[in-house]
Length: 133
Image (cartoon, rainbow, N blue to C red; front, side):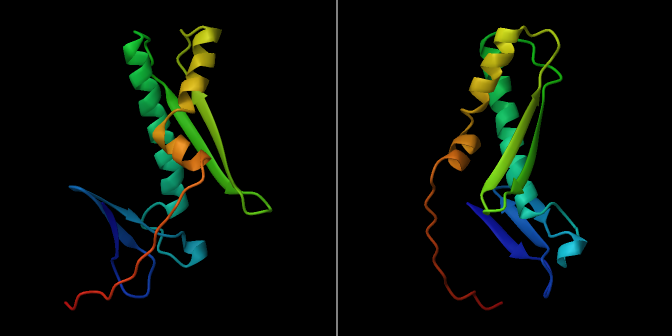
């Protein structure tokens, strides 16, 4: 389970706890935040970039491909209709041939985050009173 908790009253800075790990999410100064960490949409793009890179590296390992230096960049925006747009750019090592590069593009679409974003999702919301401190 992932939890987000406000760090201070009246702000947007939140500590995100994921198992034994924690990170900070915030909004930029221009949106009233303290810019203490990436915004939630930047974290979403980071999830896609990291999942894609890991998926490609796992595939490369299984096939004996040297993917050292592989980078995945993701740009996120919403179009005029509010539809999320992700632009994913894979920078593969120079030693790969055209067919290997094409295969990386196919495999990139198989990462779990890509699949979750590309398909309809269901989100169940429940509310409960916070426990008294």
